[in-house]
Length: 201
Image 1 (cartoon, rainbow, N blue to C red):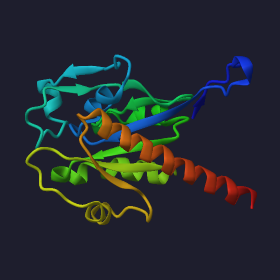
Image 2 (cartoon, rainbow, N blue to C red; image 1 turned 90 degrees about the horizontal axis):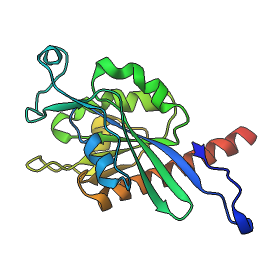
Image 3 (cartoon, rainbow, N blue to C red; image 1 turned 180 degrees about the horizontal axis):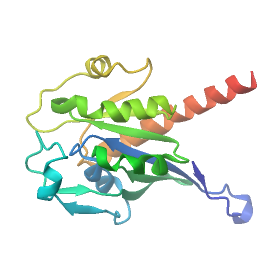
Image 4 (cartoon, rainbow, N blue to C red; image 1 turned 135 degrees about the vertical axis):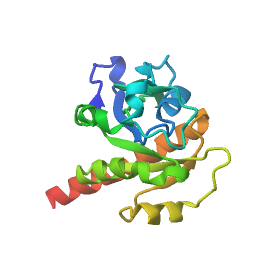
């Protein structure tokens, strides 16, 4: 969580910026989501897929994909006056997992993007956040031509902890992405408050 504590004139509340991770499997739409919702030109660290990478990157089901994130994506969105989210999109391949620990430092929570055609690809991200007790929501990116599944079905398939939100979204659509982020902030806020009360109780 990142706070901007600059003194505001006239007793106004200082602006608050929250760090959010956008994670998930290879080719699930992380870069697309960050780019769609960001109000600034997003920072992207994409490179062309190479022949060398084909031996280690599973491109099954994403044959059209020609680039991949090799470090992170970064964007920013203002949810309301005084509240901004800094979005950090994680790389999806296993060989870049060493970056996740650095990116997750200070994060309020995470969005785990899922593709129901390759649902197993988001298991590592779900496990990562569950083990580190980082609140997250699962956002099912509704790709054209993919069979639609309800949130309860996805929750059962991923064996999520009770209460973990599952939402359907279109990563290309700004309003849809913003709704996912609002849902995450609300859920993470409740989780952090409950943990604080437990600690003092």
